Image (cartoon, rainbow, N blue to C red; front, side, top):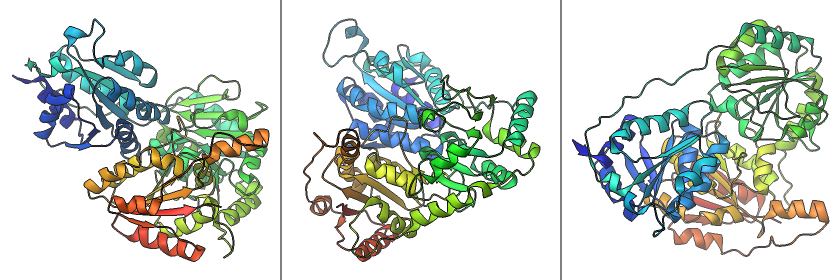
Length: 526
């Protein structure tokens, strides 16, 4: 016999949970004290959205479900943006929310909302725990479904009266993850024939190529066959951008050289590609390309993404099979000139009198970071520059949200990354996204973490301004005013820097990233 809240925490321990990110609440009292007595570290944060973003990035970096916790009502509604982000970015996450006693849920009552139905569109599965004896099954199911390909978010609601009950159930042991079978022979044969018949085949590496740890097999395939590779923004690093085959990402290059390669390609092998990442209408507008879909799930039905062959199986096993069947094809020579221009563009450093820009800061940032260091990008105009112009050499070292693409993920994501990894962590954000969750700097300092925050400041919601000007020739509703970010950083007890020359940008970034301390570097944009 044990308390239900103790049983739930023991189930979390069985799942290997190290951290629970969240905010305390009255309805969570029993669960919080059960966490205190466990091996799990509860990390109180400053906003529930930050907690969900931390769990989201933890899941994406480790492949193990991150866990976030919030109370009922506004706690749960604040949590939902980060949960939705994990859902569309295919990041394993388990959300737990408190709830009032069951005796008051049939009527209108203080802070009570139907959270289970509210979460339904943004999770793979969710449930209210109404019977304490079902806790082991509920927790095991939440983690199993969150981590099963394609991963995503799940949710459990835990009423306070259930948490206080005595229960006789025992922890349900974990089991190895379910694996998809190898690809079927007929589909492999058809895919091989299509690639060999193509004049300019190309690999499109998506989120799944990184998420499934299939990067090593993809690199082996690319090196064996000799095809060029273009990554989506979330597929960066699946193939090293040092390889001659790499054309970086969609839209990389001074005048969209990567996009021109997509235009010329007559056969696209889409590996782990989610159409939520990047609309295929942009690279298959005429629907005339041969498409081979390689993923754990069948392709979404969409007129611009209607694959000729679908290899629905374990991605790594599928890539191995293709490598064994394919001979070397024409090779990346048909687009080698494009790569040269892309590499020259992304590596060019600014002239001394050139105004500050995100694009020209990135070569200095890339030089200051080791191959295995992790860059986490917030959402905004700087994200587009990072996606297109920041070379990535290892999988999961450039974290970009491009499913839900919610602003505010960077600083919470930096906390999750610094807790999970031994490498240096850099957070890149705009002034707009930064202030959405900047309070989490206090969480980071409380945990004695050390990572670098780079704030690109244009006093504007710059990406929206750019689009407005592009469409209408003018902008409205996007201008901002900001605090002194150096003073703001110092108020948290961390270093703040605002370099005024490109030489100072270079040295400041090098010193900050090499440091074990929290450092904020503001880059004021022209």
